[in-house]
Image 1 (cartoon, rainbow, N blue to C red):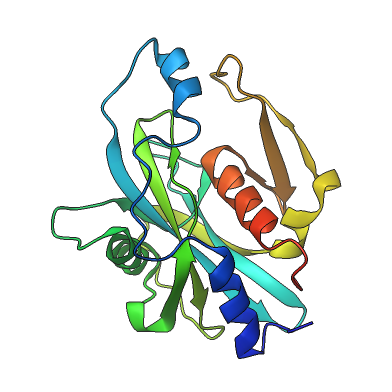
Image 2: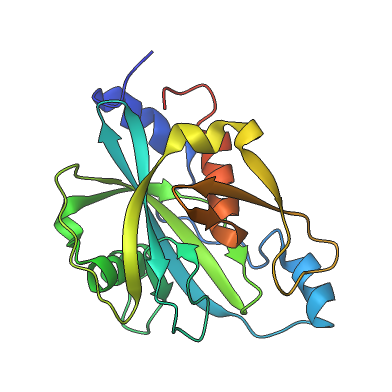
Length: 209
């Protein structure tokens, strides 16, 4: 079985993802449920996040951030680097790379995009396009404290352990939506971030994590 140090490993992973130039589906899979929650369709803003994978000696990890508690949207939540797609961005990939540099200080040349995951809608009325990428293990962080209070690496093997996930009830529950959460080093990972991680783990089933 190829390991994370083998180029074939990363080609295999890229082959399991949506192409980088894929056109996102008009309606994310979870949009119907949120439409019922809102009581009708809502205008959705476009956003992109980077899902940065790092090859460590003991397996793959993914870089996550904790958003500044004072932010109006998603304050204090665990997320991926990313944000709104600006008019000047060529596509979601460029937006994810730009936002990553702005939020955590990692420049684009330290990141190798591999492919995309399915777009997902959020309660805050965004359509998020996740871009999976390989991040150089010796990356250095320069966090923007206005956006991010901290960052940490989560071993991807923990995401694949179904027994570690638990039912989660947010402060403002969504009727009909059964959420799951993963706890790690005092952090609770839930919502769209958790859904993205679960989809990635499902696509990587059978690969060495």
